[in-house]
Length: 102
Image (cartoon, rainbow, N blue to C red; front, side):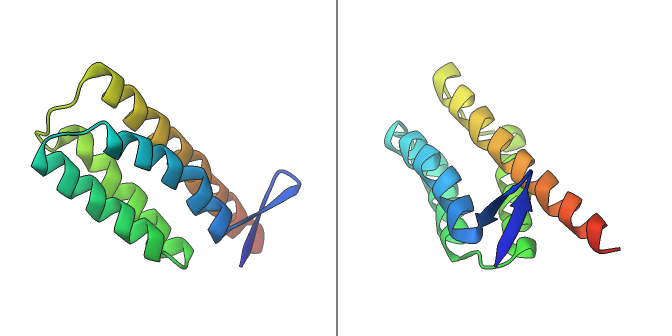
């Protein structure tokens, strides 16, 4: 399934390719078990996402990381912010496409 984003098609595979590499770089920088487990869980759910609802659920769950009590360095927080920014843009695309249908 493709989603139209400002004149170009963005497939679910493309969404994963947009986010997973950034998530992998973040994971490679982590050393604490709690943070690793949480973000590995997010990576797994993202890899399995196959519809807008599942992507949005993963994006929402990832957004809770900032309030979860985990400890991140400033660089890691920047990486998380970058990933969340990508998720937000994709989520807005979902919203924009659904409003066109109504």
